[in-house]
Image (tube, rainbow, N blue to C red; front, top):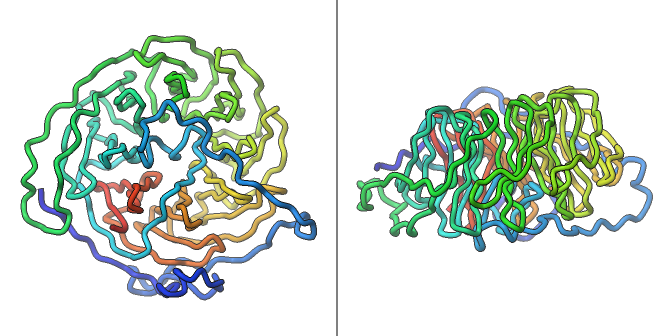
Length: 437
């Protein structure tokens, strides 16, 4: 396979020395220039506030257990499922890329599935042509694949049993063998890879779901797999994919479930409610948020649940099911928020990213792009990475300043994923692009 390099737009932003030194930046001074591919770049960030009504009160926000219990996921995997953790908080421990280098890793049929990254660095991803791929993170070699009969919109989840759990729009839940570690790849040449031919991924277990699945599975510490289907069900399966229970949620879109630190499963629904379900399959509570929920929830370190609605509301909900606060954006919120240390970040169909205080829901800043933004990722250094339908991948500082932006090969259609060495991967309409090392 030959590596395809795409045009690179390094957007004027923080100098490398300033970024490494952690100097305070003025976010309003940075924005993509005309080299980004058109005459006008995305707008500069607007600084709105730093905590609203609570800004005059000294508040310490501990990060808490933002990840939850990841015992059911593969040890050493940098990004084993959508959101990185069972809470789907979108926070990584590894630092993100510090340079604006982008390349196409693999040219496959695009789709909404985001990559999951195993401990050996292999990317697992679904595609719109119904294929599940295992792709080497170095040279982009397709190591394994499994063909299904319908598009795969969901992001896989990689378990501690050495399996990739994938839910398909064909109504099947797959447990795929991860196989042997990949051979070393050469990412620095355009010569043909010397890797052995790809093999068909072995299906270790499979289960017939009650309907198509667009939502990404989540794995509990005991190996239980929770998956939502578009016929309005949330189901629990054991590690061998035997059904444990199923409960109605009314969702017909594909909100992916998230786990609270106490094991509660949270999932949104097009019936306008956020549902909380106990690990035994009984309903804990439901909260009507007034509009359809296509967003997947994220759980903060203190147990607060953050979720968006199609009316543009970002809601913060207590573990007991009470609305803590709500924030109104300028368009539908259908991606998953990312949350850490006092700030929740969300993309929006109004082409902006918002940073909102977890204390009271007051806006801190917003950054405008030229396309729809869905799901961001918070790297270990606090930087924010996300893709946009304008075909760019953006890196912002925690204060909303533009670090850099690069052009991917086509509109970005998925949430980002980050590897242990700080490379950020996104799916586009034309394949997978990687930013960084």
